[in-house]
Image 1 (cartoon, rainbow, N blue to C red):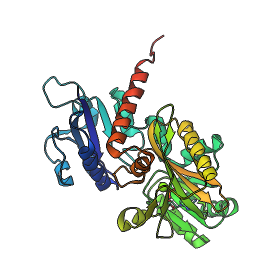
Image 2 (tube, protein in one colour; image 1 turned 120 degrees about the vertical axis):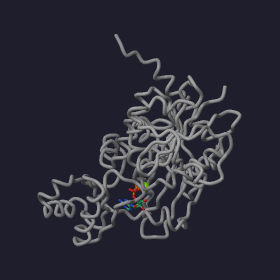
Image 3 (cartoon, rainbow, N blue to C red; image 1 turned 90 degrees about the horizontal axis):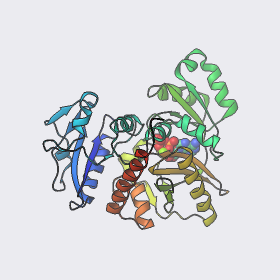
Image 4 (cartoon, rainbow, N blue to C red; image 1 turned 180 degrees about the vertical axis):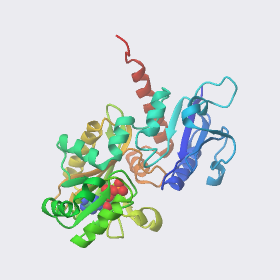
Length: 359
Ligand SMILES: Nc1ncnc2c1ncn2[C@@H]1O[C@H](COP(=O)(O)OP(=O)(O)O)[C@@H](O)[C@H]1O
Ligand SMILES: [Mg+2]
């Protein structure tokens, strides 16, 4: 029996195009002897559109941007959205959300899939939500005793009520240089590096355009090392990779426009540095109750100390993205990586079916 795999991609997000590229690559990598492919496209307006079952790879992302077909609101029609096309069809076996950022990587879509009791790839509601919110994530890491940069956070109304106090608090507890970030975004959107009060003030204004919560972190001079984690209860760690941005920091432009940020895999770091990072990454995975996959990102200081920066619960997943490349170098090629993620999704779902809901 083939696995009926629902691919959920697009999304009302800055990473819409990236998600389409990812979907195209995943479709190409899937073995059609093993999988039925059922595309579900979320357009930029946020409408969910079910496309026809695919029986061959697509050559162009345009072929995945459906405009007609079943236009269904996920709330009223979620069950039929996740069914195969045929009459009296069974629901899809596994859903693979290839979505990044808010409304995709933050637990909202995961919540819908939980309600429908459908197996899905990747992290659950809690890990996705906590991983999206940099303040929550860092609070969890602090509780787990993981080394990280100092940080403070403000909500918008707090800052509006007492701006001068907010700046003084940052200067006293964090100092310069510091990084000001919206709590709930990715892709470096709304992030500024500040070296003085004037820049700090501008950075608050900028970051609060994107979120009602902002985090300010101590800026460190460090290498940026990333590892991939794969698994459920017994997660495995990939070889390390290093990102070397050409810009001052790994900003939006460096990530998506220039494309000349170097990815070095495996990263040239010492065994004990890798040991530290691997242990911390697995601890972070467990602390956030992750499942399936994460990419864990670290700062590695000159004196060989690893600080965790963040985990990404749905890391970039094109064949040229860091996470798949890390696993390729660890010995798992892209098609096998996808199959492994699908079986991890089934495994976690099956385990959940054992839970008693009455007593
Ligand atoms: N505290 C920090 N010290 C030094 N550089 C930082 C710091 N925080 C972020 N950066 C730089 O900004 C980039 C984006 O920040 P990050 O927190 O990873 O946001 P995103 O979730 O958008 O990827 C990092 O990859 C790094 O280059
Ligand atoms: Mg990052």
